Figure 1 (tube, helix red, strand yellow):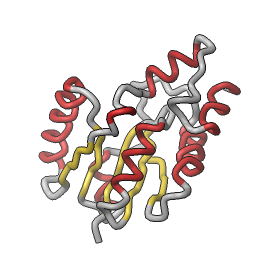
Figure 2 (figure 1 turned 180 degrees about the vertical axis):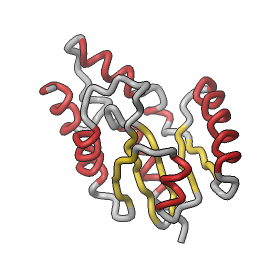
Figure 3 (figure 1 turned 45 degrees about the horizontal axis):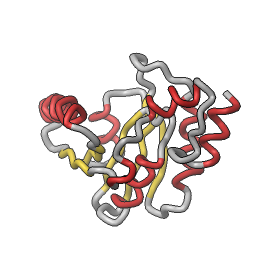
Length: 156
């Protein structure tokens, strides 16, 4: 069974994240969307809220589950019986950062592989950071996130 873990803070989960999970669901038997608690990032929503939103947004994808984690990613992956980390790449800058992570993860757990997927072209410019910034100025984020996510951000 091929189990992939798709980690991130998902603050918020965007249409780009959803697209990546939907496409990856055809490549793997199971995908665990792992919502991290990264102390270095300024999360505007609690981990519990981000998990609940991801569950709602991805509920239509049968082989996807959503969990939170607050450990080393490689330890979480191993504890779930997975050996694949799924990551999205939007830009060259993403690649540089992700390439560093791959190297570190290989040292920590050599049996874990990282697989990269690029988003659909019409979603490649979307980032959680930009969505939060637009929302902070009262801008319309409905083109970038699921309606329930837009509502949650507006209410927070």
